[in-house]
Image (cartoon, rainbow, N blue to C red; front, side, top):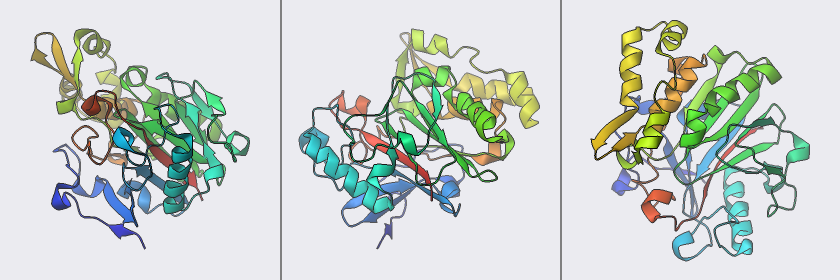
Length: 310
């Protein structure tokens, strides 16, 4: 039986104040010892299975405790095997149907199918150098890895196609979200304005201090006039949002909002603002529940996002 947890119950999840409707925010669910996050915008799509793992319910130990889903963090591979088995059982998906990639913070998006599924061998990823995955095939589970970077989920309900991309600050500057939208349009005739998109759990602006070189990379990273035209909004409003992406804090330091940056990128790519949900869950603020590279100073395991067509 899957138990649904209320927001901020016993301070279990810190919900960040953000410009997002309450009904869009992630829901913590639990089955036995395993918990995961689910997104309301995707929950009511009948042909879809999705989720985002937490640290709970696995067998890894120490700073990797307990649901580490990475073979490259120094864990016992048998522990990671068991962790994948447990989270997949909880979500109702087959471990052998997972598609895994060695992410490199780039903007390469690949269409995948059954031949890219891992099968019985999870430890050697079939794909390398890929940060975004798309498919329209059933029983192909797109799986991407996280510990502060931004998970992007895409669903084309008309053509029954999905996309799942990993967006760190480099991927965000490179607009991997827009690349994913274009790739789905090319491969599946997806209409950007009909896409449902979710910006998943990742580091929030308050926790994400960056240096001047990173802040400079976000100067003019989107075009206000294009967004205003595509979204039928006032240009001045878009310009104010763009300025809010990177806020100076003094001593050549800035706070970077990857949630807003990715939202603006998707809006520029033609996804309707009302179709974009922000989960409002910060991995760093919730480092007891979720792995955070920044909070742990690099001593951590990996979370994973899952998305599949039933």
